Structures are given as C-alpha cells and as structure tokens.
Amino acid sequence: MPNIKSAIKRVEVAERNRQRNKSWKSAVRTVRNEVAASVKSGDPAKASTALGNAYQVIDKAVSKGILHKNAAARKKSRMAGEVLKLSSK
View: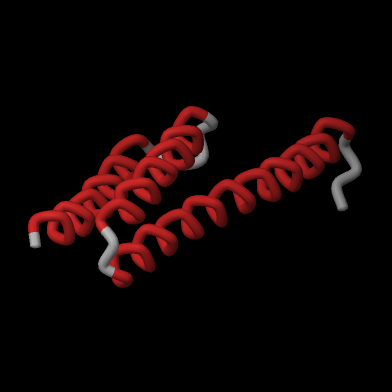
C-alpha cells in the first residue's frame, strides 16, 4: 500500500476505473453473444434488432474511452457481416 497521498488516490481511482471498464466490456461481450445467438437461430428480424442494440452499447463504450474506435469498428463490421449473410439467404 502506498504511503504518499497522491499514490493512494491513484490506487483508488485505478480500482474504480477497472470496475467501470469491466462492466462495459462485459456488456459488449453480452451484446456480441446476443447477436451471434440470433444469427444462429436464423431469424433476420431478431438479428437486426440485436445488431442495433449492439451498435448502441459499443458506441457508448467508445465514447467512454473503454474501447478504441477501430476495435469497435472491427467488432461492428464483423457482426454486420454475419447479419448480412443471414438476411441474404
């Protein structure tokens, strides 16, 4: 445990940020899994709705600095490709 006041504060802030980041990353994984499950079920309407929800969560994570914008774009692109394949069948 640090003795210096600023170091103590940095430990507290880092822990708070870690918890916040963990929550948002978990939410991103959850929506990604929801999209994958809806694609697997074969329902284009459900997959499209899940994709919209995923876009919202991912964009919010980017705006909060949890995900890098390029990583978010990559995730969204991959999910959109899966949904597009499903709807084109």
